Length: 295
Image (cartoon, rainbow, N blue to C red; front, side, top):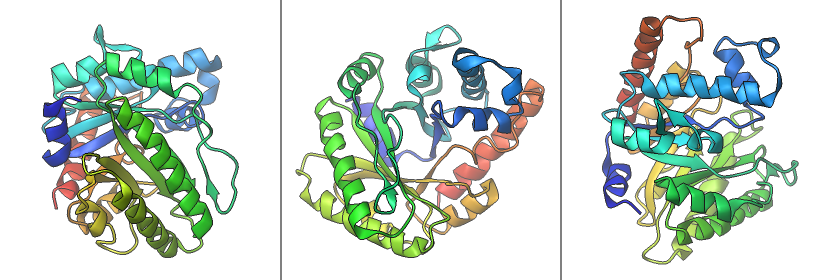
């Protein structure tokens, strides 16, 4: 594991850009970017377009390690190039941004109020490739729809089990058990999740750390015990469907929590904008998220 990158993730000032939309969420991301489904045909063309969008973001002058300390990539993005250089190498060498990669293969069906991750059948080979390409860490997402204690504990158990494999490969795991902002009792779900996470964190060996990516909490400072936990390198927040303004407002009320936004980061960016318009709007979004992450 790269010690300089670990130092950036432990104490760097800024936030994480989440650019890891997978096949299921790509059409929605492209639509928000101003590209309708009728404008492309098949997965290959769709993934070409989303890579062009990501490359445009990452190459933008305002997208630098001064404010964006890390970026989570989709597997295909990791395997592609930006300005002729492999994506992970471009991020670190040209922008001083730490690269992560999404490793989960999507969600299982809803059971006990949650969606576990599908079995990761290609994890070992993906981790090997990630190490070869200079990736620092990984991200994997589960989904909590309801405050079901049994379901939440199952999600946390699964996440930490895969985190062991990821850590053994020399990579930093980001554990992402997303709580739906539409949950019938989100505060209860948040609290159950914090309790389950603390139990598993307390069981980790003393030389192990993980990162946590959690939905913005309804209760301010709910995540403070996780932020302060010695087994946690960093706690980051997903926007989860909140607007950029809403996300930053909640984030700013939670000291020590930094952003890892996707939709909120790209809000207002379109394929139709000139490069100057695109760069100006992206720089404005980055500044707003950066400021909220510094509290």
